[in-house]
Length: 249
Image (cartoon, rainbow, N blue to C red; front, side, top):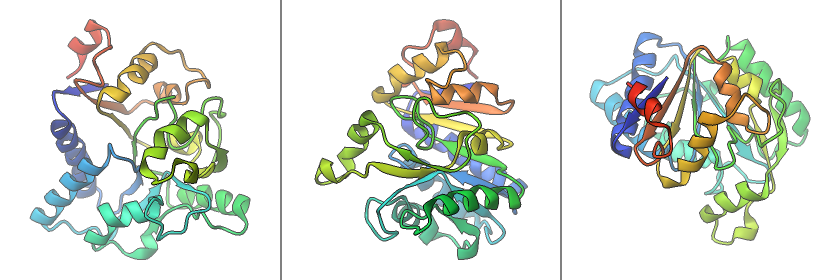
């Protein structure tokens, strides 16, 4: 199902409301969370709502999608740092209920296996929030990632490193590898919300719309999911066919 809004602000308010509704309906929900510039206004809206309503999140559990290998939790470009800056520092969420991949794990393969196992032990994800990369990656699952993958180490593509290099003072410092939740971990979520905004996502959203389910485009795996919502602003939706725009509600 597509939801198309005129502005980034409207996209963010809608997505934040969906997250808030899930938390209010299921206080012990297990949420899969994403990072990146697309999510910053979503989390800002969510925090505003939660603080106004004094929502209790003490039973909530979270799992983040990914983390760079080689960055410490306090590195300004780590996703651990991002999540605490934009969300966790402002909530009464118990530390033991927050799960983020460890980019400095000494036994990385074991850490990956343990991460997927922890998701399953928590009962799976009730809702997974996703962004999308310009090459169609979800999490850091690059093109040709197997759709039955669990949490694993990935070598980041040249395109992903270029895209993410803007966050680093020196692009050469952009990590070459990351830990990412696997595509199967994502697909097993009971509900998925994919958010894309801005002109940089126009082309990939058109490709996703037209694509068959193919490992060459990781996000196409989502077309198998029975409870998927794709939330776009008008710029990201600009190349979708007219009938798709008309059917979006």
